[in-house]
Amino acid sequence: MGWSGRSPSGIQAGFFLQVRPGGWVKMACAAARSPADQDRFICIYPAYLNNKKTIAEGRRIPISKAVENPTATEIQDVCSAVGLNVFLEKNKMYSREWNRDLQYRGRVRVQLKQEDGSLCLVQFPSRKSVMLYAAEMIPKLKTRTQKTGGGDQSLQQGEGSKKGKGKKKK
View 1 (cartoon, rainbow, N blue to C red):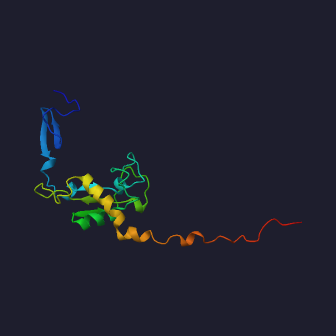
View 2 (view 1 turned 135 degrees about the horizontal axis):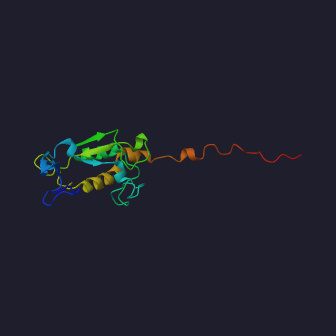
View 3 (view 1 turned 90 degrees about the horizontal axis):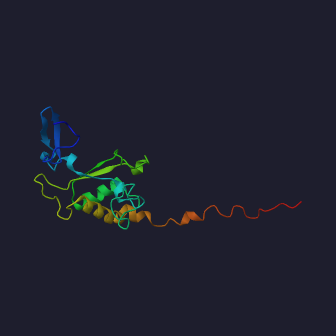
């Protein structure tokens, strides 16, 4: 039996396989790793929650629930405040993000399941529930509410400097 590029029926996804002349051999199961391992935490990039992005650009929640330009630090703050085990990877970038500025960098890893496979928090059964919660809470952060106050003072500055100037008469 030759190798056709497809796994034979009966082998589930999640197994690491090695091809031998006699056929397929199971090597190890990906599910054998503990859900509490940090590499098994879910990833949340700021682009998933950004209302400025389209679905094609990486947004994963409805635009009505998305947030304007969230940062990885804000996502981390919201998730850790509710009691989730999170950590921030500052220098990671979302593959669909073309802008390389520091503002758009970072990803948050969130633990959804404990070592025995049970949920860490019952209110977060899926990655989508974590994203929707983060998008709901980010606008309520103190850093977001303080930035919106009193920005109209500098708009009128600099006008009126051309007073009295016009065409010269000969």
